[in-house]
Image 1 (cartoon, rainbow, N blue to C red):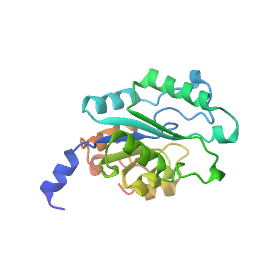
Image 2: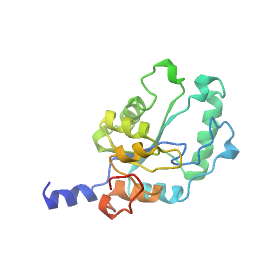
Image 3: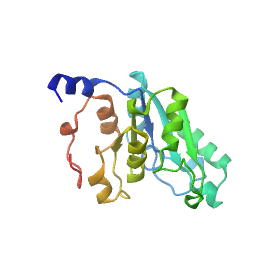
Image 4: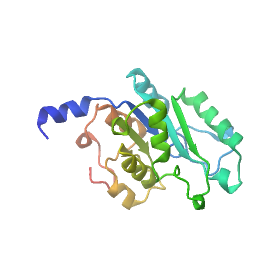
Length: 196
């Protein structure tokens, strides 16, 4: 790619950024049905506010198989999501997969259904969207949808998921800066197991 085209790509903000919820925006509490247990990750509000200030639309795409497993109900998911918005501000779109992994739905990540549905709701093409998540299924869903993926590893992220990710950021703020074109991959500190 020519240098000036690369520079334009680096500084062109996406039309939207979609986030995984648990482990990415908030600390992961398995099958959480208690809004009081919602704790944002460090820098989450600031990262989201930088996207809002840039006019980039934001959304959440989250697997919540606890509904399909019978450990929580849809109302529980709604209450937790509402608490996320109380702490982190409003999102333009929410897409939730409530299905058990064995149900074979089209929405559960790593399938692209949640991302494609969110893109339709926002009226943006997947090619102009960035997906930020903490595990390989988030990255695979982004790739299948035609979106760009950025991985923010946590203690549950497998080394091979880091190695296979199209882009890796140390934390959420760095991932958002990368999505906005404020950082290039080579500007990011190395993450163990990554190619960047």
